[in-house]
Length: 605
View 1: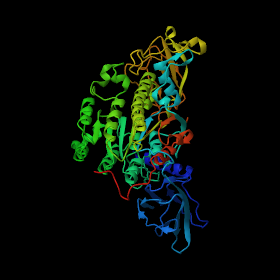
View 2 (view 1 turned 135 degrees about the horizontal axis):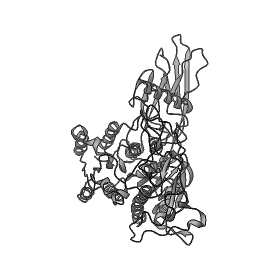
View 3 (view 1 turned 90 degrees about the vertical axis):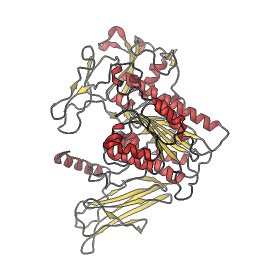
View 4 (view 1 turned 180 degrees about the vertical axis):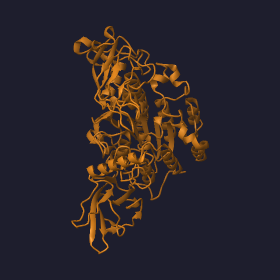
């Protein structure tokens, strides 16, 4: 990043701090010293959850600030510039706690003062059966319309009723999550993962840390403990993470690492190694092999020294599980894994030629469950269907639908595991399953049916009675549509996108809807490779100017609509109705909230 770009970033973060109310009241003295504080206002923490406090001033101070928590003095350590940090605090009692900061001038008068109230939430033993295991499945970017579209593509409508329901639609508890971040109405995946992993809010782009005035530096941010670490330290549980993305991508990283920039892949990979070294990360499956193979494979070697099997294909993963592996780092692609649509060779087979033996999300989920279920203290498993978001970003309706259906098969595997554990003779091994999303991507709507006789024109869309009903489309019962571009096809429209060509037929390979090169183009323009020869030109709503730095707005964007949630098992009822996404964290803790083990107990190494 250039000096000018860094300056812009600093000002942007200062604006975030101001808009979020991170500036406390300053004492009415003549001095103009201002302080920023983290955690941010209205922060709720779990009892026993570790967190940092950070105080920064906008001008040199004559002495370090005096910091107290509930009247007890803390010992802040100098960080970058005029900033001080207190690391690894815990609130041991439920209720409201008061953090106070005082800066004294050279003459002994108060130059600045601020305060912050922090709320500690208890997670006592539930009134009925507790959960020993928790499976959180996140369909990245999956709004309600994405789920409905997948169901219609697969099961159609019979006599005005759904031909069948998806597995995720059959869970007994239903609700919605609000998803805004600390910095914006519309969240990104990093801030959304942070919310569910920590129970707190942060700015877009951050993972496990709170924003400050030095966005280029991850080392001086105030950090907060994430769910897998807390469950291990307080309950002795182990964790696994499964994704179809690069394993250093925002959602998996949000549960395992701390970074002020979600793009810090090397830092995030080291954070994942730290979680493995601490003993609680037992399973990490997905893409991103290049980060671990870099520098002569140092990270891969470190994982192997910890006892991790390192399969690179579906067959090797199966062999690792069958061989009794207790720790698995499975990296099946150098970058993000390929989509289910391409793995089934529904498009150009060249798309997967370099990595033809990738496991499906369902296969990875079943492998993770087989290994984690051996741990007697219970487990937490995160499963991410990452490509729902990625395909919605490029308005690829077929690949998006296939990803929702692939994700639903992973849901079915999780539900089958839970149904077995929750109905057997052992009352102490019950499982909570939560299915939700981090945000909605694309502004997806379903306006009607397509008429093949009008392919390439606006008349392709048939609304109301003219469109008829979608047929069932899974004669072979494999959980995916038999026909891709049939004569009666559900039309999926993406409303939060750039100008683009569209003929509502499948693409041989993933292609962006629009083009625009930073530093070369002034405006974004529709991609002629995408249906340019026969598609309808659709007007978009996203910006058209290409910025001097950063990213060109060539893709569909996230939206602020609430996302659906479905749940099953002990504690699931806590998530009925409309909740903030931070409540996922607290619902999980309350579901497993039996008295913690002896202090310092961790998973056996």
